[in-house]
Amino acid sequence: MRLASEYHPDLISAKEGIRQSQDNKVITAQSLWPQANTSLSLTQAKSNSTSAKSNTTTYAYGVSGSQLLFDGFKTINNVNASRENIKGSQWNFQFVSSQVRFRLRNAFIDLLKAQELLKLTKEIYDIRKQNLDLITLRYNSGMEHQGALLTAQANLAQAEFEIHQANRGLEVAQRQLAKELGMKQFEPIEVAGDFDISRDYKEKPDFEGLVNLNPQLLKIMTQINAATFSVKSSQGDFWPSVSLVGGVDKSANHWPPPATDTNVGLKLTWPLLEGGSRAAQLDQAKSVVRDLQAQQQSLKDSLVLTLEQSWAGLKDAMEQVGVEQKFVQASQERAKIAQQQYSVGLLTYDNWTIIEDGLVTTKKTFLNTQANALLAETSWIEAQGRTLEYAN
Image 1 (cartoon, rainbow, N blue to C red):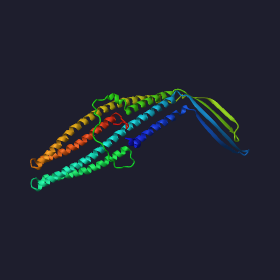
Image 2 (image 1 turned 90 degrees about the vertical axis):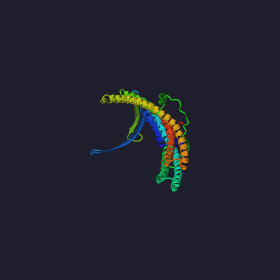
Image 3 (image 1 turned 135 degrees about the horizontal axis):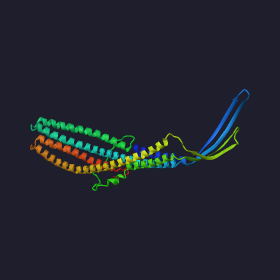
Image 4 (image 1 turned 135 degrees about the vertical axis):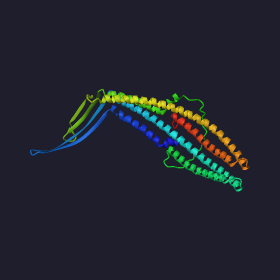
């Protein structure tokens, strides 16, 4: 999680989104501060008339400035909207972090499962090899038919294929984890861990309370706040804009120019005819607020449903692990007894191979069930919007 926090490109992008929104606030607020400009010019004028020829050079420089006094609180509301957008980008970072955590933990579990599956396929290969040796011995002594021998050979070939398949799956899982770690150059990875779930999850949580902490929902709430300030900003368009303006200018036909002109005054701007654009912009801003409010309700309902579904899936997966564990124990004991019975001729090949195949299937199912339980826990954590800092 530490490596992903530092190197994952999605998190880097989300951090830059925060920085961009902060810069946008500074840009939006700049008109609240005094504005000043300087100018410097040199102009040459030539006259080639028949009566007289002249060559005149004019030098000029000056400073001008303005200070916004009132604009119907438009700029202030735009700054407030930008402030809410900063909060929104911060909540977006939290949401991205939760998604990275979800994918990272899934990748870790997939690699852990791939490692265990490779061990299991090798164990199954050994079982199939022992079975083939036993059947070959019985076939050579005339105690078993050729169909049994061919089936045992096919089972061994299947087991060998599954080892190769597991190796390829292991490489894919390593690549996936490397991606979620943000590794720029791939290196083979080995993980350590088990499939035990550390928490018991006995008490059903308060879904309504949990959903209010979800970064997705908090993000859209800041969007609603920003849109509300945008409505107030649009209302400011119906008010005049008043600014204090002034300047100092010097100009003459030689350098430095001695003449000085100064001006100070108030500038009032009030659009009279604009084809109804201000009213349309205000109506549009109000519509955005209503749209976001509807999205918020829909998102909240979906998040609560996801929490309910994830919780149910987690409880089902945890209970299924216990059930499959009992099947594994039973299959192992049954296979042990069946092999002894077959070796002394008390069990036919057809019945024995069914029991052996059942053991192989049960072991694979148990591994999948264990991994599914951890994946279900990951989905439950992701449904809560937990970020990389969440320890579990």
